[in-house]
Image 1 (cartoon, rainbow, N blue to C red):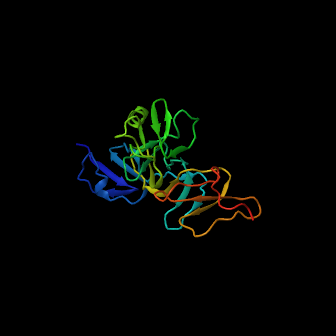
Image 2 (tube, rainbow, N blue to C red):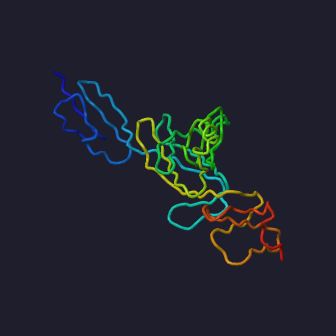
Image 3 (spheres, rainbow, N blue to C red):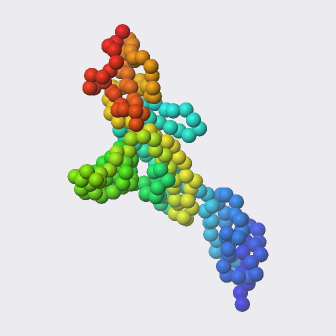
Length: 242
């Protein structure tokens, strides 16, 4: 019978000469480790990946950001998120995202777009070949497009657009199966919008808004449930410039 001597990072591990080594029972510290099994003149070795992968995010430029410990941006209609899943070991790393504590979805950029195109979240999603992606409204982040078309034709059905505040989370899974810690942010999506807007006023404000010198557009964004957002395109901008 061959004697098997196990070592973890060079130190002998008591294992009663068994051919299997229970890594969970060793309580490995974070980081990478080297395991060897000496049998006679042979000493194969393995690298144990105990480093969690990450998925840093890049978000589209918001109208404004709200204070608080968690990043909270405000957008009109939609926003983009790019993830860059990464790990310190070779092998494919999968990015994942979930919305409002729902199920996790694989991150793959945006369908039918060039590699590296960010994923777009929008109030009702975007249709690509009979599937709707990035839906912030009811019905889920990804759904069949015909579902919305069918229910829209019936007063008793239909989907609600996803205006309001949402919590998004993202994480990565590496080739060894390690699941990284999830990071999160909030995004408030308002109806309406204009690319000319440079100043956004949220909430209730007594009195009018006045556009000052310099030609900067002022956008009044009323939170959902208190009326519609205004970008001035319907003639609703309060008062002409002073």
